[in-house]
Image (cartoon, rainbow, N blue to C red; front, side):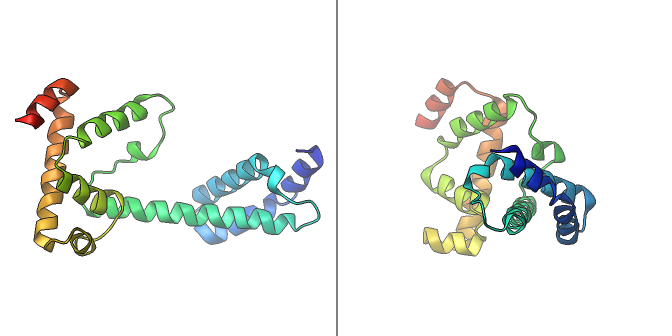
Amino acid sequence: MTSSLNHEILEHVTHLNALARFLARDRTLADDLVQETLLRALHYSEQFERGTNLRAWLTTILRNSYFNEKRSDARRRRLMQQGFPIHADALVASGNQESHLELREFERVFVHLSPVQRQAITLVGAKGYSYEEAAEIAGCAVGTMKSRVSRARIALQEMLSEGEPLGEMRMLAAN
């Protein structure tokens, strides 16, 4: 990327700040949106076609970042309403390998759920379907879906809190 494009992008920061504050109605979120927009613009600068409207391109990046943030926020709220504990600490990347290890640990224990429990927790917990929608997809009653999700959550919590080695979990699953 040429330094002239860098300077042209920086000329639009005032516009981006104003738009982000208008959309977000929160100064901190607006600042994050502008920062994300600038990072993406610099990273994907080779995709910008010279001679086209740079301001429109940057505005589109900012708007898409805003919508992505809103969708992510809605998913967090849905998870909290469905009983998944979401803490502020869980929403911030720590910068180390702990979150990756926790995900791997979750994946290890997840496979030990029964197939119907895996399906239930995936539909309701991960994909965000309502119990009614998930029950229709699984071909079961709504109460059955609620029971499957509840049992899956309890099983996951127990397996994760026990911290059993993978071999012991396989023996338990076989019994």
